[in-house]
Image (cartoon, rainbow, N blue to C red; front, side):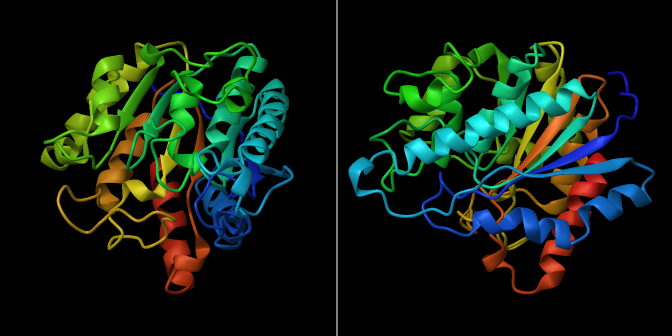
Length: 306
């Protein structure tokens, strides 16, 4: 592993909960900024600018699309993100995209493609988001983002086509890190990971040896392409460790990750010379018991990428 040279960070806010099953994530970019993310990175010696927000969307019921709620708005937001990210990359900036729900990562990956800099995807998430319309009860699109980037059968072409001709990614360009899926019995997403040959680093495996798991995941993603983006969904953490996730992991085995486990993973990934940016997703400020919770989240992000 080689270490990347420092590049200027540019924040991009995506105040959208279009893909969620409840509103709230649309408030995250403002809350994370207010908790001091940019200043904390500057204290570490980083150059940080802020490109503002793309137009957002607050989740609302969509009775015309019960199995793919707010699909048109999720795709519209992802398209706006793709354009903004492509513009940032043209300046040589390192994108730090603050969402918002998980579907914004579709736009980030599409933005890299649009800029002529295709990127693999290291998906740090409590679930691999491989559902498709009809397989998740709420019809929330944030459980379907990776499936649409891979253009799996039953994907909606409106979202799958955000980056141009699908698929946006091949399965060989994705690594799944931190899921708390059951290791026994039938599970649709675990089965799809296996069928697609996507490397899987489960929460249980990470608990056994966080540093070794992070190094192995890095080796897998570095072999997938010239650069990679990290998707960081706060629900990869056990809810008792940091109660911010819009869809909390249950506090039961297999446990979500602890803060030190996520720190060592992000630090390992961000040290690579192929690390090309990060997407922060699924923070619902309304779940925070007090302001210190969001500051602890910012501390975690800065410890990982700063």
